[in-house]
Length: 292
Image (cartoon, rainbow, N blue to C red; front, top):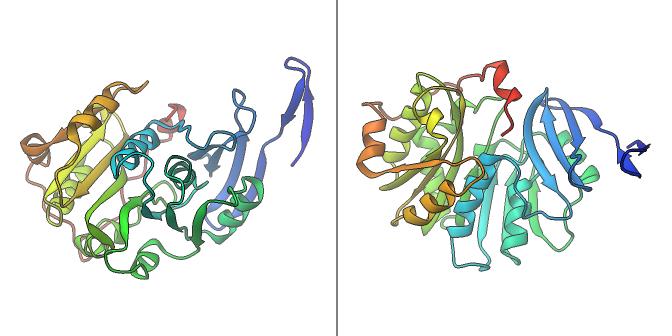
């Protein structure tokens, strides 16, 4: 990891770290505004942002929305059992450890070389109870115990697309098995016009969970641009009012859809099964020009 003196700031500037990992070319880019913060990119696509001095800081808007769900999954500060499908730079696992000390977390990240890079360059707090498994997300989920998790977090992308086998009702059967009765499932979904993938994912979740909410930029929900949407699902009433308040107060305000409005949004889409599942759509190159 190279260092160079930055005469403008009178401080040591850290250079980017670039390595080939299983999923492509990984690059850790230092944040110019935060002394020990980094953005992880895979083949040029932003994946994660981590501030080692402040792991409760979430830079990407979709991760802040997922952070709201983590905040509301249990009373403030109470430890939880969490399964994270997709690791990246372990941003949300670090966030959970910082905001809910003594939580027990399992991270499933298929890219073993990426895990090694992140552990070396962005080391975890040694006190954090985070276990990382390098295996396929669905295979890793299958090893979790029945009713073990308060929270299952899905943020899995391969080449900027969610793999097909993580989009089906059979996959959600595994999620439901692992969740305790009052647990929450939160997933990062990405889609653009005509939103066929997003509508199908809502219909799929509705086939397995009685309570749903969707958080996204209004322009994404209207099909005006490609972007992220955060799906929240559970078997108990969701904290919709508080999610709505937090989404509205975000630096990039989001909208929360639920109930009849969310059902109408699906437009008659049918649940996805293993037999019909396909990868999520590839984002247009221009999407990465917009800060997440």
